[in-house]
Image (tube, rainbow, N blue to C red; front, top):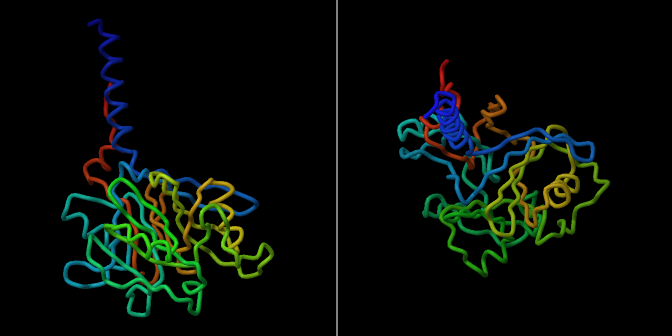
Length: 262
């Protein structure tokens, strides 16, 4: 093979190797309707998402750095993470919480105080090859058999409709984070606002800008994001449930290496 052709072949292989290693999650900053957001997209058909609450010793992990340290023993790392649902003072989940097939907290179906009880609320459900936001009563009826799940509320978008209690001109504005899913369960978009927004604006982001038929609110002022791709890993008080994308540590390191030297 001629030298130039050989070099091109090697470069092509190197490029494919780096691209495949770097594809776990894609994060970006974006502006919509005058509000600023950070969006992180995950392909649920190919990537590994996990929920995190306590380690094997029963201790609440609570911080992105703690979770990443726990994963190191598996040769894994956090490619992305965010808080994933409301919790009590002891960091126990307010609603349904299932982690790796084990139910920690039952489904709550009745209305109640606060954002969680602003029904309809919903469940973020992980199954092999897909992830779905499912309204709580639909979840109770269908029993979809999630391998992991976290309940939160309110729903932001329900089958293409905004939550009926959201007001466009509401003055209740906070930093907010949540998740939306496509109808086939493969496209998952996590969003966190970078300025104060109301529920209507946040829900509109998922439906009208991202084109997602179902979306769920995770939380407000305590919302935090771990996005190494953007050089961001928010610190603060200990969190309850966390959702993360996990990848091989060696693969993550390989994505930053220079594959070919002159």
